[in-house]
Image (tube, rainbow, N blue to C red; front, side, top):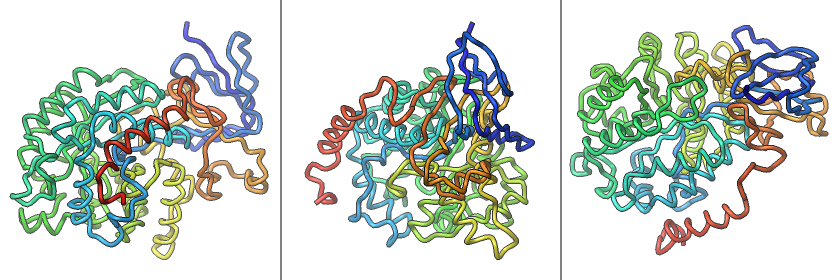
Length: 461
């Protein structure tokens, strides 16, 4: 029999279910990886008890776009994202990205995953498109190693860039792969890591980096492989590349993707701040999802997406922190707060902004929908036991705890949570990870950072 746990006497359990249920002064019984019961005064003497008195419990946040390797390329003024367009920034930053090796992938992934878990994220998708030739092909393998060490639920996007610079891309030759190289490794990773069972801890997503920097055949063959294997697809879209796509192909990026079939319920895009209202309809009609990443939009001074209009059209929306080169942290609670404030600024004069709770549902249930995980995203019986807990008896929360649904984004709860549980296992509590020496890993990570990224690198002088 699976080991039982009970979270006892929670002040509020914000379920994010279809009925927006909030349980007051209730317990959660967990058996193995799943929630078994939610109710008052549950009694199972044999169960491990976690005292949740005075606490709010929320579904684990789901991050649908990131670049873990960029954790070692942040807090860097010499490549100044706000003063460049996206494609110029890519051209500059790739001169640093091409230094990455397998050790830096491992430690930068640990760093990002730890930050995510500390801030209530239990499922993370990473778009790993950085494959310098000297680094080998086992980089995603190192990410799964890091995920297992920390206990986070991990969806790996195996990305690639295949268009040579001489044909119009921004990618240095050291970073290019052939389509066959890329797809061969996708196939290997699917066979090794992709798990479709309920409560799966690992899946693979075929994720060519972006249409503007890839050959058309890369996207078309990615489609063929992904649909043959039954895995999902992801790429960047609508983040400044449309003018180049029109010049090259005579059409906008979404039209290009639609023409080749790179849309559908098994596809989601990152960013989308160039999408038009007509394109919202295309996204909704095809069931294609979007990961909203507010940090790079703010940092770069780009458009704020119109979430109310997207939701009105029936688009699938989720939330992503994006890579640390355009965010500088992996804090999804901070991203939730930022997204709420951006929408408040943008949308109130246009008919009303999403509430903080509606943004929370995008970051939980919306993320589960985009990733194809009906077993996650809300706190309900028979769903995965992924959650985080906030102790509310802190002075800074006085006067704000009457509304647990809107509490997080509205009051700016962006610091570390008090407990994070993934798949029924407590992986982070009261500032500590289980089976992880934070100080020791920090020291090792800094050594790798100094050796790989900083050494003889003028960007860090």
